[in-house]
Image 1 (cartoon, rainbow, N blue to C red):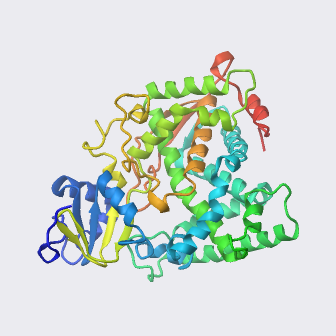
Image 2: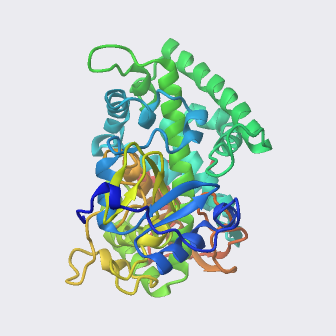
Image 3: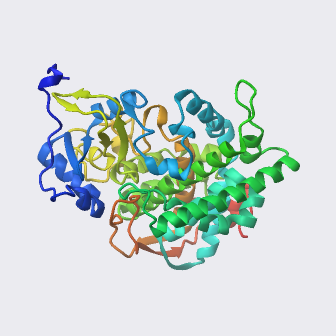
Length: 472
């Protein structure tokens, strides 16, 4: 960092082309990634955007990513950077609580994502994926997000809330949850009574009422052995205090919200990437056949899912090329000197995975699909710390990242083993400043594979081996 006196410093260079009064706001609202890319192309790794007089300072590259994560809760505030979160949840909840309270709340859920607990979720992931295979039938077409999104929600509801909740309230919960997610507003003032904000707040009340009913039901008749939800209800803080029902409700909603917004888009992009790259798709299919087995009924369980290392590489490459969270936000709590410039107190500070992940300085041939760039056995592997940030980083890194990756591995493995698929539509990102999912329509044509021998197990064998029904 350059040692320039604070008084002699200037703000980050402003990207040209802003409109009078609005600055870059309207351009960003229409196509945020193109605005961020223009900033990088014309100004480099540090630049600023103007949102109606509010400076939005953008930092790109691994070294700035590291600074961003290390200074979160110090020079950079997460609490003040995402006001929509406060409206959707609570000012004293999770990342927006004081650090001690945040760590206490995080400690409630982190054990649920360790290997010992994760093993129980894999059969659920297999079961819900096989249900999708049965619903699709032998041939036809499906659209990525409308088809895979509900499966992601089914897996979350079943894993976090239990089978009975999922079977009785899964559809209603999903519809309410989509309305609740509409409260994720980055651009417009939250006090505006827009239709989506009104629907989000209405859905929030209904979801809390549903969850409270099930909390009371489980307290009256505990599930034995306990599942994720039962364990959450019975958890206490280290000092013995019970966790409040409000915190439990918020934690469940947070896990489902964060998982759905990220995973639905990421698994859709991952399937599209594999269908668009038949060479690596065959690599994945060969791995699936080897790991899961042929017609010998070997289970797609925890050990087999962990062993799918090529699938891991494919998922990391999709995260690099298509980070669903295309932007991460904080707010400066003090003047921050950075590389000869000054970020002023009260300004926003942004990371842009959508741009950082495609910088030639970090990744060779950055626009190419090359999962092997992340292979530790590859002498040319590109695994620089803080270069891949699709799930965040630091103490606020996504708590459920391992759950999400396991879920995607299982869903993709089941689909690839049971169907031959091809893309019908050109794959492009959704327009506007919302979660960066593939735009609709993004249809896939599929045909059931008639598997035998080393080609892989059929759906009935997989279902039987995984210990779950192949229908229902």
